Image 1: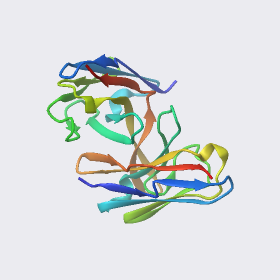
Image 2: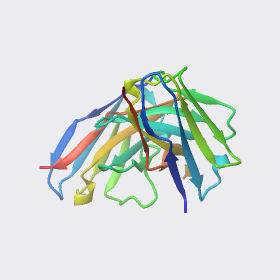
Image 3: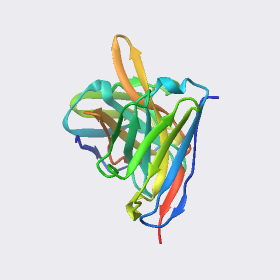
Length: 125
Length: 108
């Protein structure tokens, strides 16, 4: 079925690295821009990064720019997030999400229509 | 970066009541790129509204979205027990996506 499944979370010390993966199935992965969104414990949603459908362009939130790298392998239907120089403030559930384009009644819209179950990253010494 | 502010922080209502949630942007937001999500404890967010006013597939018609410019509303006409959750607005502009801080709808 149509789904996203994240993996790779865990407990890591400050300053260390971690790589998250998101396996997609049930849809044409290579047709969609893919995103990472995180949620610190008890807090709201924070957009982290996007990689365009062909992997040729990425954009990041200021809070992770220069430390995190988003990438994708369309041959494996998999999205990645390489997280370096991790900080306590990076502790969160990390979700991958699909950005869908909607066309209805001559109107165009974009929104996150498919989310994974999330993977927890804890940065602690 | 466009900042989204949601009000109130918490809305305490009874089943059957009408809920009106506000999302205000620091700059004009294109309606095309304004969405609303519902999140229940321990669950991933669920898309409710895209394009400011179009319900996503499978979303009951008691949910409606409206607004333009910098002011947007999510209205739940008659709260059902399963509607008690946190609601987030989200916008896209200049290659950056932002979420509002959320409004929690809980039982009065």
